[in-house]
Image (cartoon, rainbow, N blue to C red; front, side):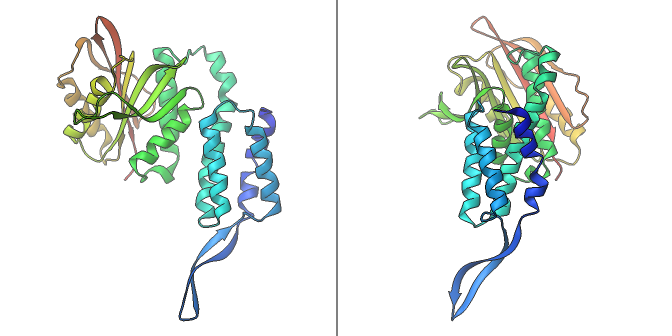
Length: 294
């Protein structure tokens, strides 16, 4: 990929968006009268088509197949002509995420972060989560949509699988599904379970902690994370209650270091960590919470 060329194309997004024109989507004919809804269209515009082809050509050599496929799927959805503006906005989000990663690569290299170290994992997970906070259209999305956005950011740096079937389901029959699994050289490296909470739903939280640590981790990943999308009014109070609950949780493995909060500069983000021992090997367990407005 020609990094500068791709960023130039992404910077043209406002110009491309201005090409949308009003249209009426016909859905039915009722007693001779056409029925439909007002929408916007861009798919037949030649300038848009040229820009799109240029974007896809640059993405052909971008080594992150999952997010590239999401961009291509979004463009195909625009072609359908049903909700072109919504589909374009989805593509726009992916393109901005890719451009952000390309722009930050030199800074990351100079920072000395090893993306597979505990500090590196923490840094890049926080960055992915704050990206979600910055996208207000996601705040009221379904939990799976939030997870998709989280995965797309992580996929820029890691090999990430979502809804991976492995381990044992909560019922004890059949295979369960992990929300996100980061692999390192093809091997399971970090399990991430994510959930939206509007209050401290203790049983629901326990289910996700259990999924991350036991049922869905037969290999024994060295890292297990629980991410909470907290859509609450009083974030500080919610976090304090969550911390107290996790401190009293009956962990299935030996607790080597008790739960402690990490220093995070952002006021609407919290992280706590603890060290567990599984089969005499360490497990890095962390819980993240980000505040999403109601």
